[in-house]
Length: 171
Length: 171
Image (cartoon, rainbow over all chains, first blue to last red; front, side):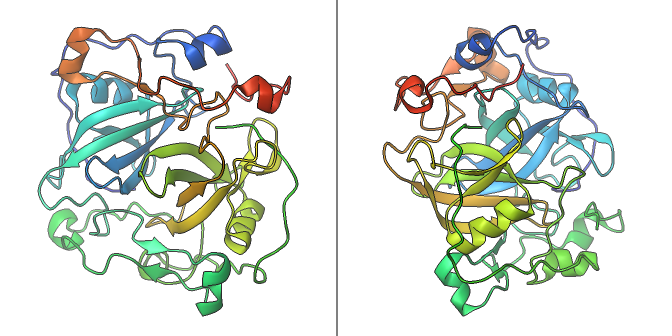
């Protein structure tokens, strides 16, 4: 989850048509985009760095964010904490250019492979990835079960970028 | 999303303690595991192939599935369609061995880097990844907006593995 907000663009070739979901075969084996939005009108999105494969963040899209991502080739999300459409990078400059977009078997999740502008960070805390801590599992736990930082240096100071905007993390 | 179900193991070093969430600083900058489960008691999990970085699937864990994944080092999920704890691979043999587990900034999502047994497939449709189709974006759409298959061969025949078990995809 990250925080930067901003306006969106209407560029890109036309609108996006979503097909009605008519059969499991159509959804799983077909070539029609027929996404399933949840009760809140959202679809989950996992975003990875197109070069390194690192998972940068996990976000959500409503139909509008999905359509704008497809037409512009830049990642748009729905911010659940701020309840606004969110053009990633509009505040921070760290726009995510979509190299490839994929959709899963039952079409309730998308995967964006992106190239990030500037410092390459995608996390509002200042790290490259939101997943900057490791959870020890199985035998590793013999050395203790504390989270282990795998990123050691922030790419930016959140205060410089977001100032006193409210932190999106909810307890 | 995939389908195989099965019993879970109680192996692994001890139980998992989850900390109460007391401050944003603790959650984002601390070393305590203090996950935030949603209204349904679930946390989102993205699972990637530890070698290729490919996103294999997106699933959900309740507290029990999270604890069993941590103690056993094998991926456990909560199946939303079947409403059961699900030890991935128990039916298909395609167990996911956790190479690394990470948690995100606000601790409402985890990332598993896994090694998959057998044919290496993680998708109930038979593909390696659940994300076997690409969505054309921006200029690519000039060649048409149909989904494009990026995996061309199934790794297994779902009928052989799951027989007539109900398909987990919901319309």
